[in-house]
Length: 294
Length: 277
Image 1: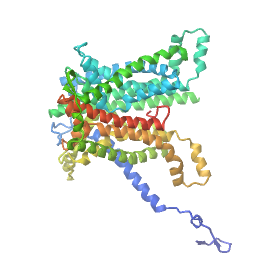
Image 2 (image 1 turned 90 degrees about the horizontal axis):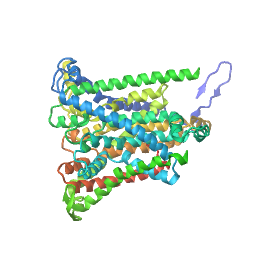
Image 3 (image 1 turned 180 degrees about the vertical axis):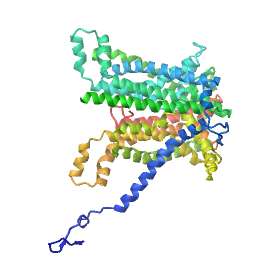
Image 4 (image 1 turned 180 degrees about the horizontal axis):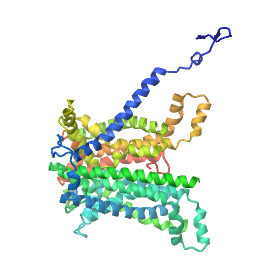
């Protein structure tokens, strides 16, 4: 490559390619286009179901394959339809109680686990991974078998009690796993100091340790709630006596081909609610960081 | 803090043994006997159940499960890595928010999303109806095909892959990248020699989170496959619905063994056993 510079002789300007470096401009360009397509495809794949749910929720026709007019009657009907309303109420009841119980217990268990020796800790963490990694169908069947063998002792056990226990079972590991890393970061002297200052161990747990790990507790709680709110398979195997949560209700009304469009309306509302909550928490966190910086 | 709170972990040991280990023992026992439901009084020890494992329908269901799960996981790795890396490299001020908005669909009911996917995979559906009113005539008929099941699996589980790869990428120390560039690596080489090896942990945990539910789930193949495609989850579900606990348990035990293999793999990668979050 030869370039002409004013006032100079002709110089051979060395190019980076002359040193054996290849720019691969074309390959990079092709890859860039390919990547953009893949990303758009991924977003499309994730969003097309909820976009369809949204379309169905404003569709006046009850036939899923045609679009009548835009209507909001399904939104008004959410709370009219008896069985859907019961299912929603059951879902909320189970997920709130399961979240609260597993957050409290999970935090206490995590504190206990953090004090164990290496070997015992490894042992319990391995056990803790079982509900997380186990196939839902295997967990569900396992819990059903355990609950069924207790049925002679508690005859009316199946129903909300078994479902709640099952939900606590699979949400606890999430809380434990979210809290443990925060406990590891905790300064051990903090607790010793509070004891030296005359606070008893358990009040100190409440006053010193819990506030220091509350971020972990909170994220565990969110995880537990989302897992519980959306669960189908484990609930399906552990419920009884006609106690349906939303997923079971959808599954069984799909089998009867009688899925009410109100459920699409409800799902759209939940998505919008999650979106708003997400934005609000982000704004609040941004403001808090802003305060801390000043 | 050690001496005071040690006993807090004991109830959790008991809880996990009762609800996670004992069911496994019951399932193993059930797969070695022949009885009705959970009534063990007439139970006879038998190895006949194991013959069932080699029947063609079971083998096909297992092969299907592995095939669909492997395809879905590999696709999720490729797509998920690209998406996670693009967000990681993007110049958004609040990448976490972008990330959460991206995976927002994860928070609406999974079954309903599958039903919605099934609806738009029919030849006549709400979207083609709207488009035809606008004068565009398209038709897509993939409901009940293997492609429909694979699309459903990817659409449902890819957020987990994106999230875990992104978390792994976030943890990479930026000074390592600077060092790589200072030492004369090109951008591409830096990616393959520094960033990619450091993010394999995310790929492993993401793959497990995608592979296991893909392999064992029964709702997605049932709804999107419309009964044409049986995975092992469907077979287990059918057995338990027909009160055939013995064969159902046997298959569940086989699945559990595969999963234990996966747990072993995780513990090889991470000694503390906290990879998953």
